[in-house]
Length: 265
Length: 268
View 1: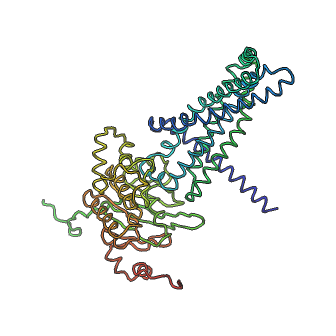
View 2 (view 1 turned 90 degrees about the vertical axis):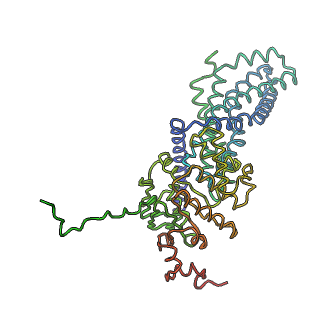
View 3 (view 1 turned 180 degrees about the vertical axis):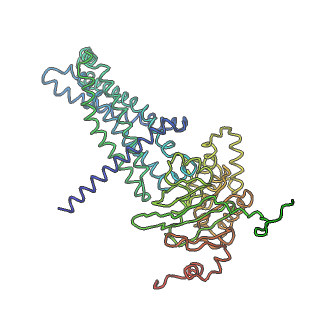
């Protein structure tokens, strides 16, 4: 019993320490944005790696999530003769939930893990110490450009995922199953408003920040050579994904208070 | 009335100024994994000298170097660089202090996403130098000084261990720092490669009066480059003296190290 209590206590303390480290890194990023040196070349490189490089995977994911969701909704709604409302359902779900979450999970896997691996490798090969020895703060050089690039890229990637999800759903339901295009389009446009889109963008912005902070933190704390870098990479991806899903729930509650359904109708 | 000389006090000749320390560490204690790697280590690196720090593996030489460079914080103790205390100060405020010295890491620590030329140019770019012609000239001069100019377009992964160290040395000297810290600069090199690196270190010291601290296991290197030798044992400086005193010491710990004798009780 004492052993279990001790283990639980240690686990709790470790989690608290972890949150403290994330808070410290966030504070360092804040200081870096206010006082650090501006490095446009690094920002450009990260925009290409994070935003431009993630487009294909995000578009394909968004498109097929929209398509399969459209098909399932159509199959269910058909029984109630509501198949023309499929577009409305797909559109709102893609904007508010599926687009941001699925995009964030894919970006966590593709970009977050790469950040942890790259920074972790630099850590275990003393390249970060070399930066520090040259008088360069690692957060200024490695984390801030990545965060800025992600803050710009994530909303745009989510917009792409949403657009292609709705588009492929349209192709499946209208072209594949013959739902009249006018009904489908009118229901979609009538049910989707700027508030739905705003929710997706805000979530994307928050998820992007979460992914960068968690992944860069894992990289900066990597140790024990190649094994440690591998572990950091896996943990960055898994932790980012879990945080995205948990934060998404609370963000949904909060944003639905700010932008309730039908508020702009 | 003429002033009479004081019968008690002789006319004073100016006392020689005490040698000024570029780096002064006092009472450094660092525990890692429950073990005191540094246990009260104190050392002074005097301006213009080359100090070699020796010790058995795992005695905390590299940890000491990282403390002197401000890359690690001690549990207790003090490190002053050029008169400025660096223990406990914010990482951002350390930047200007760190730019006073260059650091050569054991494995070079070259940035593997940059080629040789970009690696050596990096400190200049980060210092705000923008003219590509000036940067290129200085990079070529630094690479020529270490005999690596012809390899300037190679990536670090395509360099041998000795070549990496020479490129890292070029990166360390390109900003013409007042002090160079070397972490095992000749480890893993063949005798000729070791002699070449030793000659470079001595050359920098003589040409630019650079203050140097060299962590090494190599007794030949000590003979060639050191003005003073410190021997680290059990987290403290066990010996500090000239190379002549070091090589002729009767201290049993140092004699075992110098003679390369195995520990008593060690069997094959």
